Length: 189
Image (cartoon, rainbow, N blue to C red; front, side, top):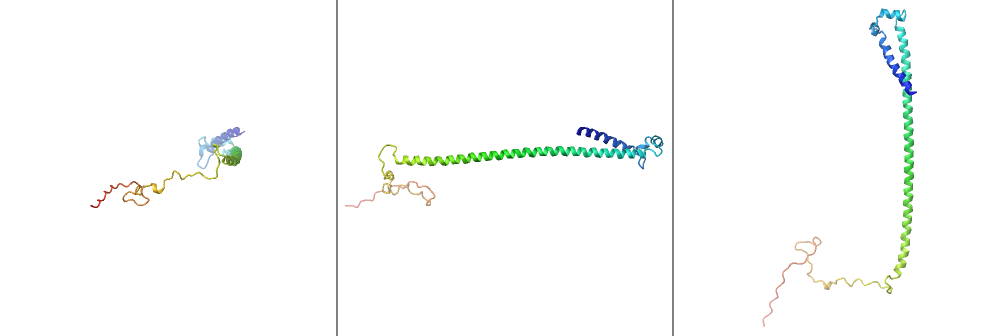
C-alpha cells in the first residue's frame, strides 16, 4: 500500500509541476509558447485558464492527500519500531534485575555458609586446644618466653651509639668508632 501511494505521489508531483508551468500568468507564462490564440480554440471560448485552474486544484488536492498518507505511514512505522525498542529494553532490564537478584542470593548463601564454617572450626579448635598434639602433659603454666631475650647486663654500654651529629630518632644506631684509651701511667714506687 505504501509503495502504491509513493508511486502515485511522484506522478502527481511531476504532473502538478507541468500544469502550473502551462498556466498563463499576467506575463503570459508557458501558454504563450503554444500560442494564446490556438489555446482558446482547443480549451473552449474562455481559453485554457479555467480548465488549467481546475486541473491544478485537483492535482494539488491529490498531492496533499498522498503527502499526508506517506507521513502517516512513516509515523506509524516509527511508532512500531519505538514500541519494539521499548519492549526489548524492558526485557533486558527485567533479565538484568533477575540476574542481580540471583547473584545477591548466591552472595548471601555463601556468607551464611562462611559464617557457619568459622563457628564449626572454633568448636573444633577449642576441643583441639584442650588436648596437646604431641602427647605430653597439659599444664596450666604458659611457656617461658623470656629465655632467649638479652638482658641489659649482657649488652655493653657503648655497643651502639648514635652517629656523630645525629639527633635522637633521626639515624640508626651505629657502633662508635672511637680509639681505645691508653692505659694510665701507674704511679711510681
